[in-house]
Length: 404
Picture 1 (tube, rainbow, N blue to C red):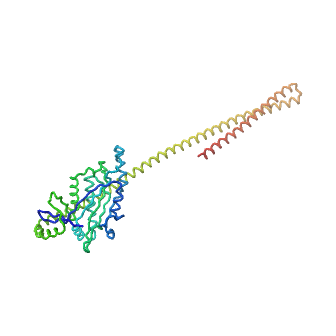
Picture 2 (cartoon, rainbow, N blue to C red):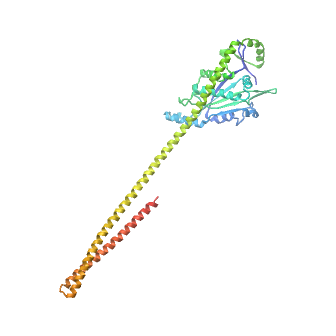
Picture 3 (cartoon, rainbow, N blue to C red):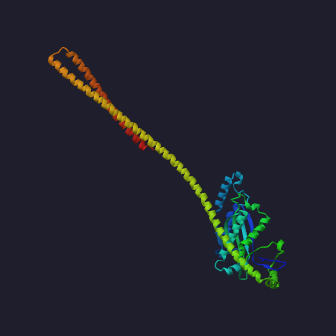
């Protein structure tokens, strides 16, 4: 593998602290395979050394590809998009892989300056770049993977190919568009500006375009020759005032980076809360449906309770009326019995006196006796019907209590 560096023809300055981005779109069917490559679930590159893969760093957002796609569909449906435009088509770019290429020389400088947390420093810059890309182009950040296990050996030294894979979901959740297909050459140049800005605090500079700098690629031998020839020019170009300004700028840039990092953290929290809000809304809808069902069931129970109370009231009135009727009939029977007793007394008197009216009194006594017998039967029949009515009422209550 040849090593290439950028050398400016006019100044001869060696661009060995560059950083650049290369963005490419992929179909939905390629997502799982590419992610396996990113997290080293599979090793499909001869330049990957698995024994060094433990040094890789993987940062993944809480929101998965499936959740992003589900949210996209809901927003499109709510906006009234056509059915054919709700999901990703077979050949459309569902996600984007942005590869950030880091100059090995500058990474080694960062490692020497931050020996214990140099990877965290690079990841912070990547998060900042992800936020820049999200704000500028609308691509939704999903994962960041720093690879330090790719490269080649030269003699006994391992020449690392430091780079970062940044995965984005190709959908703008605010504008409801797929941003990647709208990005042209001008946007790609702006992407390089954002990349340089994000990594400036670690001493990286934006990779320059050939048409603007007259820079051309040279092989390593030419690089060494140019380095020797231009060493003096490089040293003389350093100015004390420039160094002071650079220090002040570095301090300000660090402060700005801290602020931007805080913004990124807050925006990440906001996205998580937004997803949680969507989930809570769904739970509220389910709870409302349960409340409606509970109210309907409660109304049904209240109706049954009202019917039971009405039946009990009617039965109570029937029992009361029957008691009144029975009391009236008992009073009538008492009166008749009294009259019968008087007639018997008269009959006995007639017998003792041998009165000729004996026959008439016997007939009258027989009639009254028949009335008494008939009234007694009615009273017995009434008591029997009252008993049956009460038993029927009890049976109906038992039937309701065991009814499903």
